[in-house]
Length: 239
Ligand SMILES: [Fe+2]
Image 1 (tube, rainbow, N blue to C red):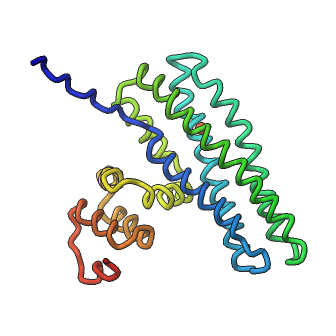
Image 2 (image 1 turned 45 degrees about the vertical axis):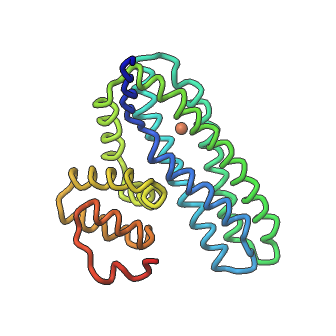
Image 3 (image 1 turned 180 degrees about the vertical axis):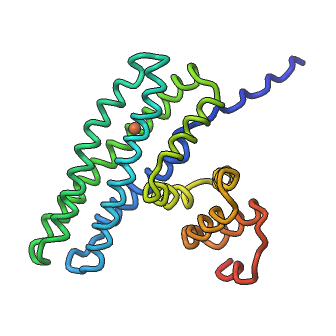
């Protein structure tokens, strides 16, 4: 019998977690816009807030990729980030338009909201489709370049530099969309890494700020994995 070749060790994917969060935020806002009852002020206000959060999340993501990831790629493989850079110029214009359409919807009287709601939905549909294709390109083509030109230690350091550069609002939004949309093992690994990099009291506050993002089952899995003791109330809502 010939010896079995061990599978190659998976490489560090700098895009995996944040792209899961962004995909979820895009699809959530699009669904929300599609269901919108524009005669309900509360619903309109929630969609406007979701659109503004999405704009902030995507704007920050583009800036981080340009400043950290593309720079690293271009330094070792000139021209390798050219297509994504061109895509990003379009995305920034689309993000500006998203904010404009959301503000227009917020300020119109109820009887004139229908056309604005449909315009926002159409724009979100285009923006979502464009971003899904763009992120797939980055995960396929950019990872190939990053893995050929960088080792995992360098890629982990690149991600750490991005995380350290985030404003508190950017960090809150990234966590808000990533945490509930990761596989449990990814979620645990991410939070364990976060715990290593901050004082215990700051991590405790960060973990507390995520209450409500996870359902009871996933919250318990995360607490178990992090070695945090269960309390009787943690079981409420468990099937
Ligand atoms: Fe990108």
